[in-house]
Image 1: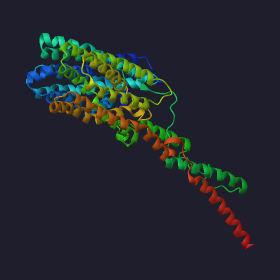
Image 2 (image 1 turned 180 degrees about the horizontal axis):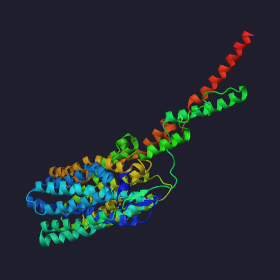
Image 3 (image 1 turned 60 degrees about the vertical axis):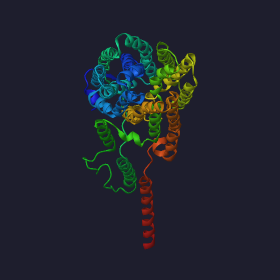
Image 4 (image 1 turned 180 degrees about the vertical axis):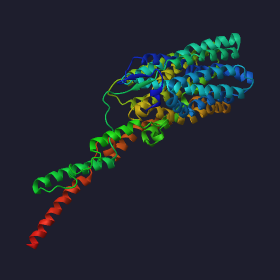
Length: 510
């Protein structure tokens, strides 16, 4: 029995509800997005204040978010194991507590190393424990509407950036960055309330199909059926009973039907693994994970460096803060549009995602060529729209059959985000080092574009890997039917040959 069934308050359905309590879970996911990625993307407004107070470079300050993103992604398998063992609700509540605790501790930091520990490690672990279980359980509540609901609920981070960027800027000017971090940490404790709303879901179909038995058991069933057929013919023709006839079969021998029931019962009683690494044997999933690895290089750096880029061009601080707001509003439309498009059927979602990624590369390349306020505003809106199409759909796509499917989504998401951890750690510092060397913020955007382009290459290989694998092993992966054992025919042929030889010997003797 699964551990999820032991959780109190679990909701039992005979099929995926596509609604019901899932709408409450969607609202909870919206606010989890507000207080996780919404805060991370707004952290760029603190950069100048932190650089001045700690007297550190861009790259050193960038490590705060880099360590946070690394811990968020590197501990994804831990989040998956804990969720499968104890349920999504307590894990998300624990994560919300750690997020708020780490941010409030950071408000009293006296060195940048203390910021690394408080925001990077403590809050980073909390982000992982809060976000991944929430998006996983939301995908379990929806099937037909999964892409659209997930995209709409994920707009929480966009509204958060739109509201937080100017609000934090104004609050920091009045009370300082320490008071701002303290208030943000207090607000993030609301994730504990969101976690309490994540009611576990159990899908129990009314008519569960029996699992196929092992090949050797199925082969024995064919042999038994063949012997029974031959026995009936022998008994009619010669009146001789063969020892394998149904009358002579011992009562303790299991029939085929009983064997099937026994195998199905054992398979259903077997507990699923807490983290299934067999997804790494799926070549299409490996390509998709490599896409996520390189694409992550372009997810966070633009939101971190758009304000410093605008300040370097002589744009005032208040106007620069609106760049993030414009980016956030455009991202809302991108997420909803992508969710609506991917919700249409029939459609090959991986190819649509590839188009979004290519457009995102073009948006990153366009930033260094903008040198005015309105030029940066247009680039920010275009980038935000394309970013929304990718970030709002890349994790739910793990549940598609082209990658791992809904059955292994929990383990697939854990491994997928874990592989992203390297890029999450290296992305912002690479941009910071390039800026320190060249004194040009445009190179940070070029680095993001290169990483995103490599990711697009691996994304383009996902579908070919799936179809190529099918052509190599059509009986197992494509046809889905069990081949008839050769022994079934060989026994008939050997029986016929034996009778003919006996007749020949009798005639020769005569």
